[in-house]
Amino acid sequence: MTPFREKTTVVTDQDLLLVFDETVTRAGVDRWVRHLESAGSPTRIYRLGASHVLPVSEPDGADAVAAAGPDLPVPTRRVPREGQAWLGRRELRPAGTEVSLGPATIGDGSVAVIAGPCAVEDPEQMTATAELVAAHGAVALRGGVFKPRTSPHAFQGLGFSGLELLIEARKRTGLPFVTEVVDPEHVKRLAEVVDGFQIGARNMQNFALLSAVGQSGLPVVLKRGFGCTIEETLAAGEYLLLEGNDQVMLCERGIRTFEPSARFTLDLTAVALWKQRTHLPVIVDPSHSGGRPELVEPLSLAAVAAGADALLIDVHVQPEQALCDGNQALRPEQFAGLMTRLAGAAAGLGRSLSGGN
Image 1: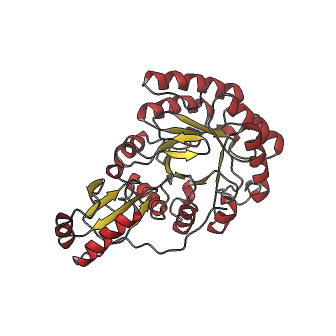
Image 2 (image 1 turned 120 degrees about the vertical axis):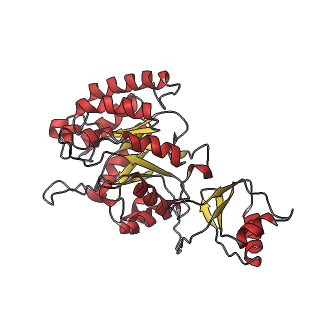
Image 3 (image 1 turned 30 degrees about the vertical axis):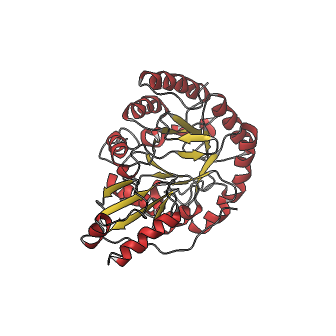
């Protein structure tokens, strides 16, 4: 069972970040804390995966850093603290963060595809879809057992009973799965069986949920709220990072604009900016943004060209019978064709399709 920590984190205005990678021991970092405190510059340790980050305030902190003796380990890097979402800044990890989702890696330079139905419905649907996406090179399954819907009369998901169908699909295909969590009270129970969490657009600023998921230590797909800015999404990701969980992926899934021709407007500018500003992997959901299957392929190809690390694609073996978002799901032959074209597009950009056949 995944251990959970109980703690309170406070962010104060600091001016410099000292970053220590996994080669620096915790004892070495603790010596830095004592050194700064003795110089009148109290700080605290923030964990970023296997790395540690110390915020240092001016002017006493800067003087203490300059006066550091040989008994203190040399920081891996020194980064000016800017903005309110600084644990996710690319300067802390210029090479980027790699997220381990089961045996798959997101953020290693390849293009990964996470695919499956929007909602888990029944054993036949889940098994058939899982085997389909696995056969064509997906590295992970998606499938919701809790579905927050605009209308309370719409299908809300199978709940915890749907987990057994995802577990069985994982056994059959070997693919890890991500599923949406909507309640902080559900996190511990789900963490015992899921490979990764998804926080949906409606819950991007559910701060209690963000903290609870961050404490799980599991990979998480954080979807951008359709009315939220690029910086607000980075700030939401900071809640996850503050819990020491660096296995975070930002997901662009379309924003609400005045344009009625598609369900949402896919903001590829966000993809390019996130790739510049944050070390976290970036995912694109072309299914929810376009809302129509014929838009999924062009939006997917554009996302790869913009630098997306992965795609989150809605696939259903019988979309006309889907209980949720069937009008945007790809049919089996459409998904097969998309994967072929994605492999070619990735190769043209000097990349590869992760898990591709």
